[in-house]
Image 1: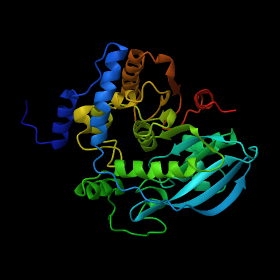
Image 2 (image 1 turned 180 degrees about the horizontal axis):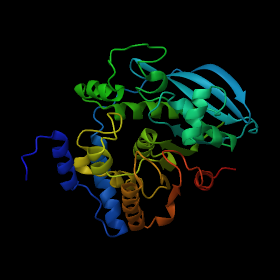
Image 3 (image 1 turned 135 degrees about the horizontal axis):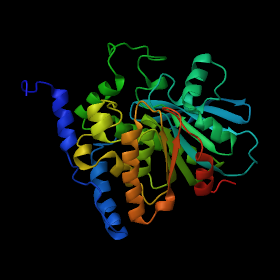
Image 4 (image 1 turned 180 degrees about the vertical axis):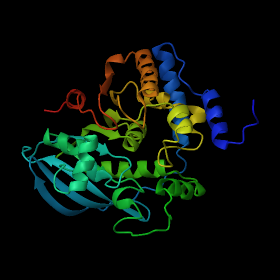
Length: 353
């Protein structure tokens, strides 16, 4: 040994590598698995902190237009005390009048365009088109063209709710990550951005499910990266969700978090890893249907630990007796949507006509 360790980062990496979460899945039969879920889920949800008050969303239609096979809308909605969001909604142009459509919340994660990447046609603006092409990330447009009612909002710090962009034009972050600054502000109030964003997303969901052409009994959720985080948690807190797709958000906290520092204040809650690892979080969705996308060339969530995560989730689903309800789209691309199994997955579990 040359000398003693002076690196806090090395200390945290070592602590994480040696840590065994208190509520790690160890059940060996379906009854024990259900007991684990019932005991663990409330503890995990407690880490979200104090949730913001629900408010009247006061939806207001801003504009409506058509792009090829999809009719698009943009709405104003209030999502919490002192804050609003813009809501994008896509529908198939040719949906029969009076028909109720299956609904998919299309959450997106980090990026300059936020929700626009998920909901855009991938044409028009060259910069947005490039972002869509890089990740095949406009699943909210593609699935609307296939018969779904899809919707999305920006999370705090992303898209139109990024304080550095229009219409805020603030530079108070001085180059620092808004996700982490919002996390610090929230925790001072006993809250978390994850919990606040969940309430905002649930409010948007309430608005959409109240549309005349939305079927509230056929709700799915999907998202990539930070949107995968939100899709996972949305499923945990919302029993209306019938099917979930998590895209490029499979890994181990000790690897992508402590080793790679590949996360931010948007994606974690205080004490979360004390309780569970990411495979346990995904496993808490069981026995509801879950489709997981992993990119073989993903440089954010690398395939070795991503597959370790998925194998642990597989064990949880197998123990619940729900192995047929867990699917994997292991695609040859990078940090993006494979799109190979999603249409059939949602058609099966949302009974799309």
